[in-house]
Amino acid sequence: MSQFDVYGIGNALVDTEYEVTEAFLEEAGLEKGVMTLIDATRRHELIHLLEEKHNHQAVEQCGGGSAANTMVAVAHLDAKSFYSCKVANDAIGDFFMGDLKAAGVTTNLDHGREAGDSGQCISMVTSDAERSMSTHLGISEDLSIVELDEAALKNSKYLYIEGYLVTSPSAMAAARRAQDVARQAGVKVSLTLSDPAIVEHFKAEFDEFAEHGVDLIFCNEDEAMIWTASKTPEEAFSKLKTVSQMAVMTMGKNGSMTWDGKVEAQVAGTPTKAVDTTGAGDIFAGTFLAAISQGQSFDEAATLANRVAAKLVSQFGARLTREEIQALK
Image 1 (cartoon, helix red, strand yellow):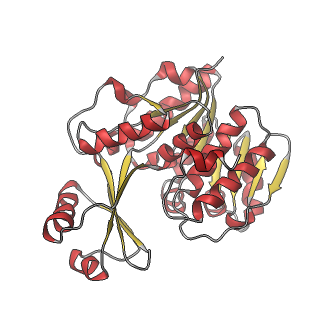
Image 2: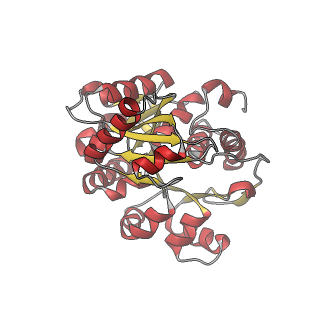
């Protein structure tokens, strides 16, 4: 019997939210509604401007990172998850580690953390509810093979690889090592394509994953069409079936398409009024993986995952609480 249902590997970020004015964004030189990658110097400048010059204090802080959100969803559905990531020995890292533990996610972080800056996404929200984000990956950008716990991976049902890792050579090497370990141990390999822009610029890296064997691909229709050079979601999904043993493609309000290796199905979406789609794909994948790892069919898993994702996008934030997810079962 496996110790873990899902072993994830991905970035570690803490989302820190501030309420600001449009005048502040202009003063800070930030483009409204855009996510910008920043370095450590810019991060410290921005925090100084927010907290010291304008006395803006964080209104909310929560753990983040795409695959981290997925592993939390897995844990909230009473499945067992392990997360390999990298944070520094600083206050942000303390918060991230405590946040994962509170959710019930086991991590590699108990083995010690290096000095440095942990990854942080500074989210500035204006009165119209629009978010402008500045993200500093920090030490998470240096995720490597060192952060893997191969014993835990070998004792898992599924490996889940965050697609964003293709942007870092050391993280890509860690993800490929995890893939090889999983395949040798008979652990099913799942991969998320993560973001259309990432797929477009790193197609070769995703092709490499596929060539070495992927059992389950998660993606949305835009990511699928870009990766497979297709003109329609249907064409893209047909091509996905040739590169992966199983596949799940989300289609927003139109639900999702699934392929369990034998049967292809389209699962209707759950009607909702979307106000913030942040984290929808992450929580869908976590819900789906938790469901199939506990014996549910792809149809049952997608139905629940659509319902959970619809709940998430109806409110602000990238996660639901355990109680919110449990109420949707």
